[in-house]
Every structure is written in structure tokens, then in C-alpha cells.
Image 1 (spheres, rainbow, N blue to C red):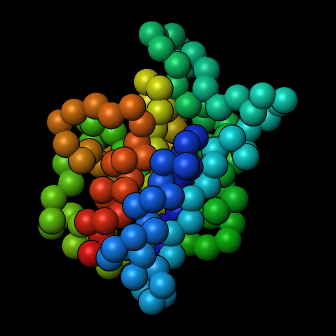
Image 2: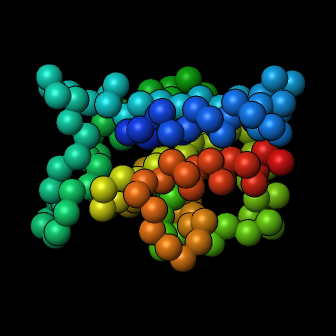
Length: 153
């Protein structure tokens, strides 16, 4: 299984994969986890990844352009079974879902940030939306770590 995680703060995801069961699974070659910095796919001097919501609304969201560019590059290298967006209003993660996801070959996990992602991302690029619980985090990175732990176990 290969898991590609797209995030604007990749530093948060180092620690969970460098210890315990996740580390052993990676070392044994049972799973590959690759973290991609969304800013590497952004344009301009400041590598901007956020903007006001398309169509209006309060708060900033992750722009569609760098997300699309990253996902398309990943898809050009291999086939993905799921492109997952972590969001509080997604289907709640449970053991049955984790077991089902553990049987997949490849998946992309998109970590939201700010007020989430441009709605066009959800409408055109995402195949499944998952929530790890009925609360809001500062970003999807911790949710991605929880999801990976549940799936890899």
C-alpha cells in the first residue's frame, strides 16, 4: 500500500511515522507513506496556496490550482483507489471503514487548512470525504495521522 499525503505543514507529520507500529510497517515494506508539501506546487515568489473562497464567503481556503497540480502529478505516476479529503462533515471513520481502506493499493489524503478547500476541489478531485470525529482541528494533518494509523494497523 502507498499513501500520499498532501499538506501545507508537512513538519507535523514527521513524528507519527518515525515510531512504533507505523515505523515498523514502513521498515518492513508493508506500506509507503509520502508527504507532499502543497507549496511545492504553488506559483509565485510567495508560493501562495490560500485565497478567498470562490463565489464568496468568510475566511481563506486552499486554492484549487496547487491541489490539482499535485494530484495530477501523482496520478500520472500510478493509479489511486481513493482521493480522500479529511473534513469534519465527512463520513465518520470507524473500524469497518479502516479495514476496508487497508485493502486498497494506493490512496491520496488531502489535509485541509484554514477554512478548508475550494469547493471545486471537493466537487471534482475528491472521491471520499472522511471525518475522524465531531470536532474541528487547526488542519487535517493530525486527522491524516489518525487515519493512517487506523488503516496501517
